[in-house]
Image 1 (spheres, rainbow, N blue to C red):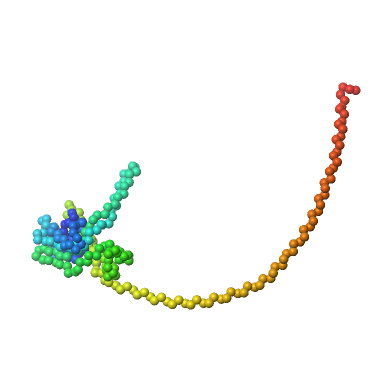
Image 2 (cartoon, rainbow, N blue to C red):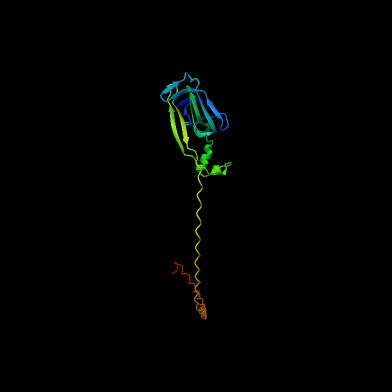
Length: 242
């Protein structure tokens, strides 16, 4: 048995036991939420379409957490003007576990237990990180296996197709921490070999300094007698003289 409900301006196809992510709803974790806007109700081959709502139909769910969704980036650009702006936004969303679908004189209930573990805790466990405020028993629980299935609700041409994400996960199972292996005994270090006696070095023969040879006396440069200046030649006689 399934139903198509309307909340936050969107439509979702749900059934008992589904995990549903919708726009932010008021309430604390563990609170019961009831949806009265049921647009369609299906039970096998019997389908009831509301006009616009199905009278007497209702969907009940349990609120698990209210968190921020994935970041959406907004990029603006004006060409040839050098204008570029990048902004980001994270929309608030609520996570619900559908517990019952009622309508047409029938009620389909989910017999499982609602787990209030948040997505942040599951991510921390998967990365082996410590979570502030968790007990030792809760910290030893392994993260649950998660499987996602996309459901598309076909609408008329006036209303576009709405895509809802339904996630199913198994209950967490506690595991024992693996025992640490005993450290192997350390091997005894082998005794170090005694250092070899250094060979006695023969005393170096003292190099006898050879007596320096006496420097030969420099030959005194004999001053050459200055040559006497030759007498100036007599002035030539005038060409006019005989």
